[in-house]
Image (cartoon, rainbow, N blue to C red):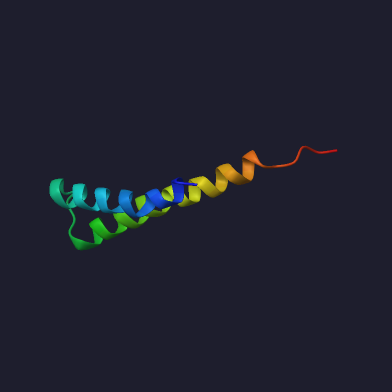
Length: 58
């Protein structure tokens, strides 16, 4: 249950790291990196939950 709540913390951390060390971009690079990493735990949790709770055929 804690995994989806990891998203905002991960987004903030990645945004700060990208802003600090830079990837050759500015505001948009930080924003895109934060959004991708912020939604990754939520999407990963949903995929794991769907695969883990599938009913076997039959």
